[in-house]
Amino acid sequence: MPSWQGPGGQGRVLSVKLGGSVVTDKERPFTLRLGLLGRIAAALAAVAKETGTRYVVTLGGGSFGHVAAHEAQEAGASPAEALSVVTSVMAELAQAVADVLAMHGMRPVVYPPHAFCKPLGLRPSCSWSPVSEALRLGATPLLYGDAYPCGDGWCIVSGDELAVEAACALGASHVIYVSDVDGIYGPSGELLREVKLEEVARLATVAGRERGYDVTGGLARKIRAIRENWCAGLHGVWVVNGLRPERIRSLVAGRPTVATLVLP
Ligand code: IPE
Image (cartoon, rainbow, N blue to C red; front, top):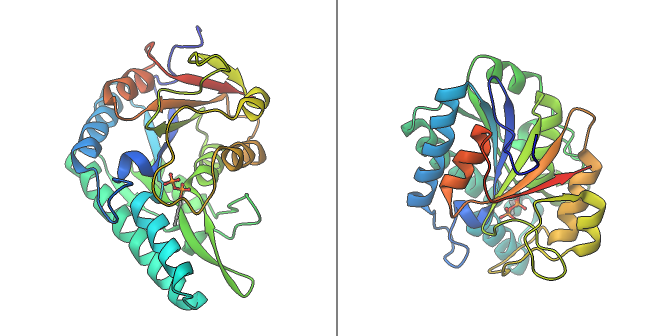
């Protein structure tokens, strides 16, 4: 299979992380990108209908979770206050996205990570069996980066590690990171079609701007999260530009498109 050919196909399970920059407007606190979300949902739903591809979807925090967590930190909120605010804001975001997916014929079921995961470092350590059963019934499990109690305080589990652990636990062949960049760029600014994870760690130069608050850290953390959760059944991780939903559609349908494939 040529590397630029997408991972989708009959009966495939794909783990799709919708980054905060495509789900929300990172420059406007608590603002959804509803139009874009609708086009992404339509792309995913169309391929599900055509090929039987199934998804587990994970959301980033964007201008919901990151802003709430930052404000809680700044205000010196107690762990209980911070947990309450961040988990509420992310639950609202997830329900709004679930509504959009449902409007396009998908059957989302929201799984709040603080309620079924107990992260150990970058390993979310979730209890996946109910999620797996919902997926088997044709539902689309919907997860999101979340806050959870840790020690005497609160911590954040990122959608980055949740999407990889979900892929491994639910039998997905690939993780797809939907971001606002075309993929991963090489040292001379060229878009890489295929790259080894270790090479990405060396490059650490994803093109694009960091905007707004980010309480989970940049690319280096993302690479560690991917590496620590990779499993034998996971064939690769794609990075694709969600601002171009037609690329998502091609990718999940198994057709060639502009994207980067990261291999172990
Ligand atoms: C962060 O999740 C979740 C919270 C801040 C509560 P991510 O780390 O996956 O979010 P994005 O994709 O960077 O926005």
